[in-house]
Image 1 (cartoon, rainbow, N blue to C red):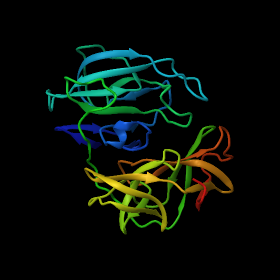
Image 2 (cartoon, rainbow, N blue to C red):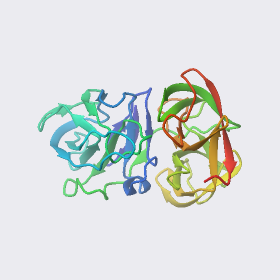
Image 3 (cartoon, helix red, strand yellow):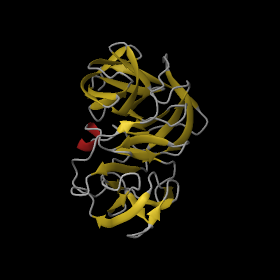
Image 4 (spheres, rainbow, N blue to C red):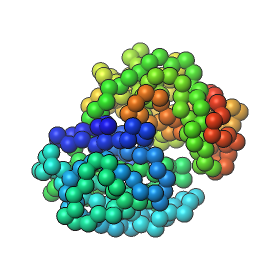
Length: 293
């Protein structure tokens, strides 16, 4: 399904996957010029393409050494010319493409192997980073065109953070929350929106809403941040002064995403690898606590 767009070009996400504009510490995400697509495969598995076009360049690049995990040893940048607007270039990261220059790829075709980049944290899941760039400036870390969310921000009222464990690994537990929204629901000055980001550990977050605004961001009625900047269909600001526990276990935080279809997915990240004692199918509750950020 198309989930993000800019300059007449669309980025797609599998219906069973998830995507995020703000779940990253890197500057292009705060500027809403990058989107991460989490297709659902694990590191080393082949991912479907979120875009279509002709491959312009494939470059293997150096990456930092993974902190707390064994990284792939490199990263890969792939540039693609989309047929819907040949005057821009799509920049893709974190996938070792099986394609060569001149090859054409369609949405859903096999793109390449998902890399565990040294740019990741130990709790980061496999994903494809996508930007829409000028072909005159396609590789720089900053820059790119602002992306817009394509799917509506379906945000039903939330009374608790609870759901079923759909994946459990030493680094995290992935929860599918009860409810019909497409993300974890909060509000900005009383107007509901979908929260997006790594909270509170990145220190900032985004909120997707039809009429973005600045002001206090709340989750379950508790202040968790302050929105200070407005983008296309979202607002962004700082967060902190709170924390989460899963059962009685303190968390490093929650990793938040959007889903193409209803059924929000939230990742609970422990403070140490192996710190969560849950298995797939468990029903768990997450508590929001002040003063832990």
